[in-house]
Image (cartoon, rainbow, N blue to C red; front, top):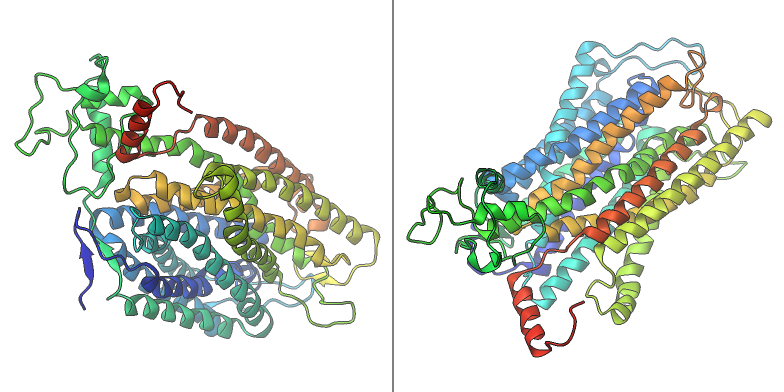
Length: 585
């Protein structure tokens, strides 16, 4: 099947809106099939595989962390060898196979341990080595799939728009918002319908449905092949970055010329897909990589004979783009811990709360389904923000996006602090209700169920969703726009690497708190029975970390300098010449 493969510097026929149904369809079914199911894996591991809550939580954190951290390898293979199209194709097939193995662990009785009794003293058999190995094989394939899909899907969709036109730039901005809208909609369906089938009807059927949806995801992706714009990889962008660092170190004793911008080596390859960047004075040490010394030789095409000794200003500025992003990325690590708690301990809170629709009802909402309120919050807010608030802000600030991406991140970080404070207050109420009032029975292997309605958890979940709508979407846009064009898959992996490290950090934090607050074998802040613990204290601890993180973010945001292009720089210089007495803002 023929596709539009775009060699460097050749103007492609952008698919734009025509390609969106296939890309969004692939993403929607992939999320329905895998991410939605992963939100209920905690319940699956504790009820079907009879794991303890701490063991299951840490395994889920490691699984999520590895899925996200694997995006670095997926991005490297995409940007260096395979390209985004091939990477997405291979990853989609791997995710489907992983979901199939996971469904088999539920459908075949020999692939999971016997079901536990309902009594508090009933004996539960742990999974055998073979059962655990089969489960982990499914996880491994899901990790491979996530490692390829997550860093490439968003960038591949944005590739379909022309960034050099006003309509293309607006299309990209809206694409980021609507992409996340469809993602949250898919999560809502998964967290209600699919999770209900898994928890209340049958795990085998509940896992077979998302497996079929993952198959549809593969079909949607490959059907749109003929429409896609496929940008071929240029080779490893990491090699160019390392060359700059090596050349700067080799020339560390040389002095930069006074008029560096006009005297440093500045060769831009005609084959690159990257936009030409203007010279900047930040990280001046790196500029030494572009000093022309008597030992340096130039080829006929204008490039350096030895790129490990002489690099162009363009290469240096591309490295600076990545270096500047790093402190902002670090600020997101502590923020993501809030989102991790909404996926783990909130589930345990709901299990020991009143999940009935109303007092006389026998129907209980599945614990994992409460995460839908976070998704609902995002789904309501994103269209309002994109269609109503952004146009209003655009008139006031004269900015294309209304406010800057760093301002959006900051708003989300503030909301995250209030999310944890509200979470702590609600948990205090839940525990006090369980200890001082009649309970509604016993949750197997945990403790007594509080009479407090689980609906009290909705405000914290809604706040978490609102925070995510600001911060995470802003980070997606920030990484995509601030990285060089040939590293946009890496840009996607940066976000998920943050999720990965946050999962590991959360797991480490939980382990530290579990050990340092232990008063007996069964009592600590994060006890198996939340009524015997102090989960609210843990939430206050996370809130304190978020306050410190926000202060660090403000320092980084004030220091940050957005990436520009040479055209923007030339326009600024021309305007300065027309109005020489006007100070630059």
